[in-house]
Image (cartoon, rainbow, N blue to C red; front, side):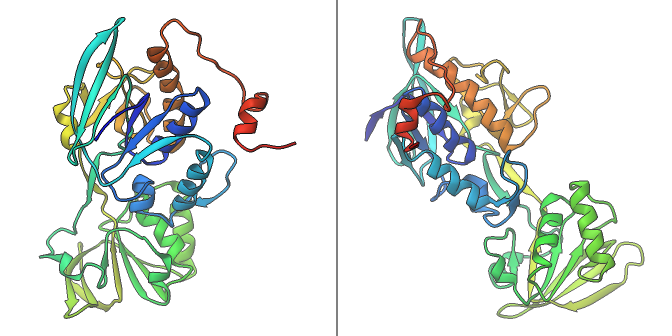
Amino acid sequence: MKIETDILVIGAGPVGLFTVFEAGLLGLRCTLIDNLDKVGGQCSELYPEKPIYDIPGVPSQTAQEHVDALLEQIKPFDYDLYLSQRVEVIEPLSTEDGVTSWKILTNEGLECTTKNIFIAAGAGSFEARRPPNIEDPDQFLDLGVSYSVKSVEKYRDKNLFIFGGGDSALDWTVELAKVAQSVSLVHRRDEFRGAQHTEAQMRELVATEAVNLLTPFQIESIQGTEKVTAVTLKNFDTKESVTKDADELLFLFGLNKKLGPILDWELELVQKKIAVNTENFETNKDGIFAVGDINDYPGKLDLILCGFHETTLAVQKAFQRIHPGERVPFGYTTSNTKLQKKLGVTE
């Protein structure tokens, strides 16, 4: 299949979805391609029920609710969506009026030509890190072993052990303590890398015995035949081992990130991220932009709201590449009656 589009967006996570909105405001059409089988990126795939607190004007919503809200926001605009496809090849085409066009090919045979490519691939492809020194923990996958939380109800009234010391481990310790029969947080030291506010919440739960904090421990073995029934932990200091009954083990050791085909596209990289300028978040290739967690520049923060800012400015440049010499039709949505009608706003 051959198609043509104004902006080809690689990645259908929150930043990719918001690109559709910003492009739609300027009358540009987007085509989104994602190698996952659903929209939402990591928000939908890894932690759909994890609360998000730092979206301006939204005190709290789950990651999936955030994705659903973005999908609702872009309903008024036309866009194409291709899931379960991976962009394999990016090739430059002839330059017209000094503006380079691009052709992309996917592993499913889709061919797309465009003047603008937005790489909004988050962390790239990713795989959860497995617990160290455990032989084949995946034999218990979905039988007591998990690497992400896709349903809070799965842990209701269960004896749960959470392993890790970062934001995800702290966040889920606080949230799942509300539904689980017991929650034990296991870490190799009594120091954590997560947000101070969440760590304080966790320690308050420990003080009230709503959470068991087990430090300095690491996992030694998993017991069970058809499913997990117990876990053995080893104390770093005393070297003694202890076995405890367990229903669910949640390993949150982070992700192994892989850029995949991006490595072949001759883009300037900085520690497995794509280097961009901060004027319009263009890469070292004309017409190829990188927005969201995939990019790198001085002062970069891996926050969704930062990705929204980045893609907003990048879309302005994309418009100029499609319409050289024309002024970008900037306007506030609050005063644009034509746009309000399109968005279904009525007085």
